Image 1 (cartoon, rainbow, N blue to C red):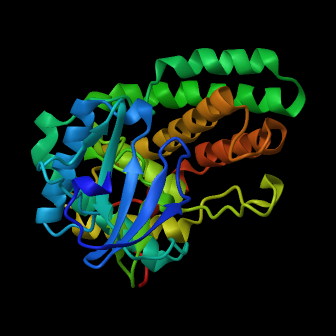
Image 2: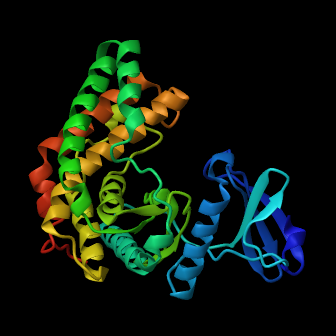
Length: 329
């Protein structure tokens, strides 16, 4: 694969253990710089979708937005095939993990707003895709999980189903009125590299699609406002969002967005948060039987409790993400 690119003298190639094992990666060091070689996951290797991802990344790169530049092969291709497999090579980005502090939440919000505005010119070319809102397969999966479970796990799935149905119904009422752009589709701390009070790189554009921008924002609020520790059980994790982090992300978004969040968008955020978390948890359990290597008995009661907190704290959340909300730097 590396011979397909003009990289100079290759000094080392090392396995890079991050992300999905279905998309293995290698860190490549050459005398011209550092790169990341990635074999694309089979279910994400659809040619048309890949070409749009690279078109978007190229557009963002030219605009000065912090993304990993996609390298082109000697044949001027951004996707290189080897049999049924598809590969991409991107320039390495330095950065650190998100630290769950307001200034970095603010930077994450500003980066999202910048991406949304820059990507809006490509709406007509973006795939429609399927996000977490109103996923038709989730209702049946939840029913199956309820019938297969008992005790606290069953009660957790039942509460998830009840909250999900109500959230979906409220979002559907206003869905067609929400401003659409090209969303990242997977805006979480693992897909952002941080610099000093700024985002140094946004990665993993495999879920990009044309959709209301508030779906990205709501999922970002969900992901960036709660620190979970892999070395502690869910019973020790906080249930409530850190509203200071919520306000920080909101401040960054509102500062940089061409158009601030409307009151209608703000009203949908808590329900979209419920949808995002319920769908993510349900699909993970359905496909793998666990979430982040944790059995349902450990994590589902916590998920249900967190969803219930979001539902009951919607006024506090909406206050923290109103266009007038701010946070101290």
